[in-house]
Image (tube, rainbow, N blue to C red):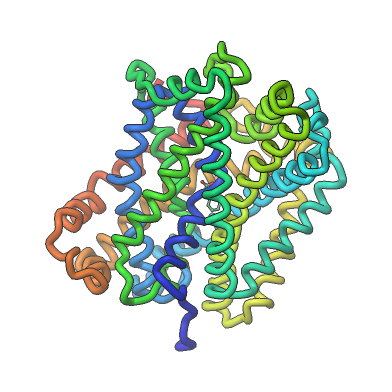
Length: 473
Ligand code: PHE
């Protein structure tokens, strides 16, 4: 098909859209808690090394594949491998993964929307109630919120790359930065805030072990939106003349800066609430933290800034996370949408309608899997645990397949598409890249230790998740 492909209108537009994808719930909540629990500054250091030494080369690989092929992930894998059946399978995997991850991310975004609504309408006291979250996720209001969030995502996407995705990112990302900075400044003025900052930043290397290292890598990988076909798809909309390596660096830096700043917001807030907080008691799951723990912290602010002030802070926080989640959701839904548009020749509205309907069915199954429908609630059982369909999607696609997709893209670029072609794509828009240290580093790492690390993460996850067997103690 030779229909000319849509493009981002500017380099900044691409960077904001890709950063919009990368900045999500993982940065704003997952990262700060992981850092606080796992050695503070020591975790930060390891995380930063993973971002720049492991994830950035993969991001550049994904962007190059997309821009060179001018296709969605499935089309790109097919075209650049001369239609090899095996690599087409890898392409399918990179198509199904975002489809399924979009579903679980959608459910969480819907909850966020509900929490924004409740906080804005003055119901923070209820949000902070002991069993509120469990009632909320099983209430019928969730279906209304679902329809609203799905409509917003589709309205953005139907506008296309420049008028939809890029425009939304140009509005939402600056607002997100302002909200984040405002909240950080506010939280740092609270009593005991600095106890939280200390906990967050002072390194404790004794906490670092193999599973923390594994967690830091998974966090970095997810945070940069890798392994989901997003960067391949967005790469296919990049202009030929824009430097992939510089743009990717910007995206990685923005993503990391937001994650770091989020820590300066969340931990001081927790310590201001209770200076004796032991981070070991914090829930591992971002979901538990956002929806059950943080509302209590916001409500406690009423002692200093009144109920209205506390509600304003809570509203701002949930809105911040909602914005981050929506720009991520847009990027991930664009992957299967692009496949239908490029691969099947559907119009955008038709592709989106088809996707929305089919995704709604599984999303609703997830919404019903928190106790309402028995078979969806106890959907499977492995490693001695009963799992809902929502849990299974997270375990299979987020925890297991993501690193596998990362591994496959490295092998694909280096051994099938070939290193040489990859470098040509990068050099093409960036003369200073040729012969640079970065080029030499990527040349070596992407075909050797990066896939090796991802293979180890994959094997370890499979052993642990499905067989309850841990290699790393
Ligand atoms: N980078 C996102 C985050 O940190 C991950 C993500 C991207 C999830 C796109 C879904 C869709 O939350």
